[in-house]
Amino acid sequence: MTNDLSHFRKALLCAAVAACAIAVPAQARDGEAYVGVDAGVVFPHDTKIDVNGFNNNAIVVTNGTGFDFDVLGGYDFGILRTEADLA
Image (cartoon, rainbow, N blue to C red; front, side, top):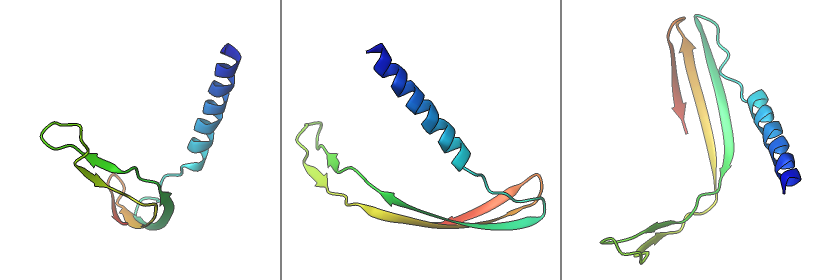
């Protein structure tokens, strides 16, 4: 059991390091504009709503797999950076 946990911790550490290496903040110098795009796949869970405190799943919203596309743009004023996102 301990050996399995050790492998899991190593894998989790590698995933965290990779995520930090891949995640890049917007690179803009003072007084410059920037633009960017993002894309991804969304795997939502179904939404189950109870009515009057009963656990009867009175309303069930079935959500399907979808895609997410974002466009962003901003300007770096120096001490202040503004950004607008359209998703």
